[in-house]
Length: 427
Image (cartoon, rainbow, N blue to C red):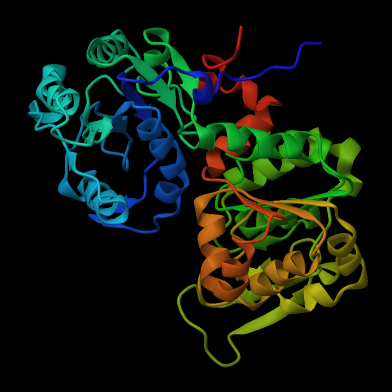
């Protein structure tokens, strides 16, 4: 069997070439950068382009300006790339320009010639970098018809080489997929690194412990069904765990929808052969309020004591007592690979259980720890800032830039089955 490999930008001749590079800089909310981690992770790719004499034209999506129901594109300054441009200017002392493209009402940007003059300034050495407007402002970006190819061909007309370094942008859009049909295309340095570490999930050091949580179960059925087959142990959290408990024990929990319980039923039935791999965190926090903590308004529930027909109020986190359980401690301590895609808690009201879980992960100093997803990383950073800071300097940790991309690859069984990656494979 021939091992699949992507074509790396290290192989590309970039000298004097206009390099169209797709990054995942979706870090802006309401006009401000939430966390520059994703931007910083792509800086080596930008520096390599400069080192090899390339002329970078950068693009990313920001937010969700496209309304799938109406087909309209709502352009707002809160989803502009300007904060990212300002950050790169301050970080790298780069002279960056954003083409002044006209918005065609709710159709977005329909005329791609607006980028030509900016790229000409780049060729003439009058700017260091061109940063295109939010790709989702362009009418072809998320189009399902020939507008996507029109956008891709238009971008290719003004550039020479395409580098995809946006592993987190896994959906097959014009700027991640179609464009690779019209230019010599390569994987960026971050893309290569993400794929290499993702292979550790598919071929882990064992035993492998996976920890997955989320606010909706139905979006995680496919990835979870695949993940449990390659994991030795699986821990659930968040609404996913709540829905699992509802179906397995015949209870109801406030805030858990019937759709999530149906999804939990499907997951349990589909993975019956692997049911022994699910490790239930034995204690949970039940609260009468979703918004505030009052004396006597919350309690610790032992999962083993749940009875069919029992009604629970909001279950907002696992309880700290869970980490005192001998079996839980053994599973976490013995793991050689730990994959985490989990915001364990439901609100900021109760966090001690989640913090204890993250601490147990950190206590296993020999395991390869793989954190997937911006929300997961942000929660880890917020709850245990000192531990997180040390972890970023520890080669036993790896922080993926895209949680959705990781789950998509897991569901497909390989990072090489992701559509944007397929077009970067060495033939």
